[in-house]
Image: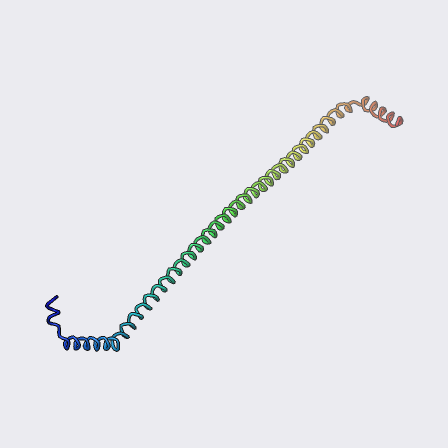
Length: 166
């Protein structure tokens, strides 16, 4: 360091100082503004990129919220459709049961009516057969009683006697 102080030249020092000042002036005049502008542009670009990233993050959150809401709506709609389908199925089953009961009751009523009409027809047929048998028996009895003249006269007298009494 002593050697530097011994070799010190004031003319060289002033020349170097003037060159340094000229260099600083030229740097400030020509390089400082473009460098500062570039730095400012870079800073603005970074800020806008950060803002865009923040906006994109917010948009993503909004999209996720919308997707979640749509998913919940779709689930609710699916559940409502399944519930409606179950209700329709239960209604159809209930209607089918009710219809089968009604049809069964109709068939039973028709069978009972058929049985009743056949029963009446059978009773009427039996009555006709009993009446025919009764007529045949009465005919045979009357023929036997009227086969003799004495019996015929007695029957006529009894009938005439009955008529007078009435």
